[in-house]
Image (cartoon, rainbow, N blue to C red; front, side, top):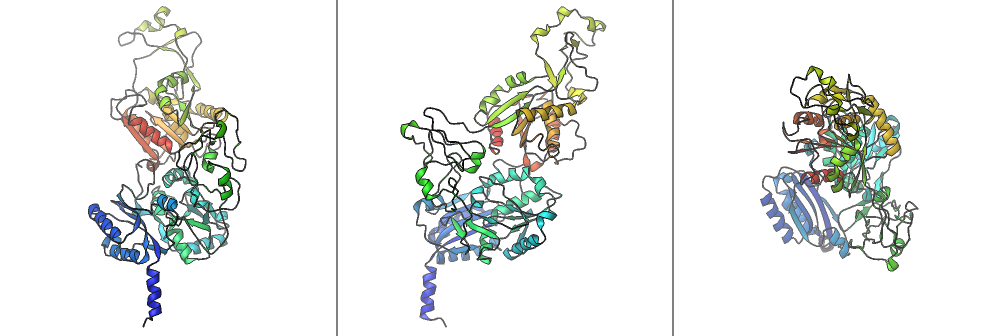
Length: 615
């Protein structure tokens, strides 16, 4: 029988504040009814926080009195679709800091219907991950045992297992799993929507491995593990920590193999173990520090950064390590806490340095270096040149100038001048001896080049013109199959002398060569390194042995929407080329403007959206 003292203690515990986190992937038959339930239940229980509902499930982070949270759990469990849900309930202090509470969404109740519970990619994927194919769940104890065994068997030496952190960089900087003899992959991403691109770029590091994944509470691993497994053969063995780091720390209060603190998306900011060691460091002075309560953010990308109190007093603006890698610095108007520019006394320009990574400029009146743009190497089409292609893509370059720099080069195969006189078919027998005055003088013509040439192709003569054998043949590109090896050697030189390049843009024949280079991406590492490809009016050439969906390179495919819109390259040819790339990492834009790169809305917005993922 409970004593009065026990009852009083129980009452006090129920009056304590707490935080509740849970998610559930399931088909929601009636979103409107579920929305009404959450509005009524959470309001009546005075719960604050975030509730996200989608046709595929729910994601909830709310705070309130523990007894109210327990009543909420009981009500949710009465709904059949929530069977098996992992409710993570923890006692907590009240949100004492208004700023932190507001940023984490604990000053109000926000219930919204969204398209997806977590944004896995900044743009729609052609092959979105099916969460029902997610990696196998491992309990905290099972996860711990796998790491322990991998350490004992030296997993790095045998190359059988990799540990993949599915969280953002600022989370990993204050806490992570650290196990000797186990290879750990930290994607170093700003936000979860960047993870799909990292996976696309690092599939060879995951292929054939036992991939052990973890995140804060598990929801991000559901989508990411499903995406990895969707890549097919060699990606079947993907496992995830059930309940995330939170459940692991509950099972191993001393931290186990997890070092530091677990970043959480509520007013608590982070949750640690009994281990007092600090993993994080101040961005500026490097002192041990892991407290994000000041909410210091990068002046460029607004990502949270660790800045100790002493450095906060010295500096007004900060540059995160990712922006530092891209050469970004704080200019004449550093951002304030609200993201609004402030003028420094004396109009001085101030640069924030971190461990001497950035040089400090204090020159009055002199502008700071602009953020680094993406550099894209542009390959023109058949019988074109760099100058002409630059002119044809002038509108594209102008509309992308804030994020990308386009670099143009001539192809290595110079072509003869071709003149097609206006005569009826068939060609007259004396065509070869037409009077020279009937041919345009060569002074008016720019030199023309190609990446691929026909087997019987001849180089250009200094004095002679060549009369076309026939009128324009829309299928001529099918006969130009030679010269790739020379073009490949030439591109290696371009990358060495003019690189680095973030991506390659190919148009028509240039797109065909770009696709071939993408297929050889792994073999060309350290010679032709790039992160993405844009293929405009492309077609496959010399790629008969390439399997459908086997080219592992993030790609954007732009081509005419139907047969006849592009006289040179048919829709089917461009679509067949796109099918050679991994579906999950390729994007298709179809347009109605023929053999061009469209720059009107909405096409330019789609192009810009694709490029934004690489900035």
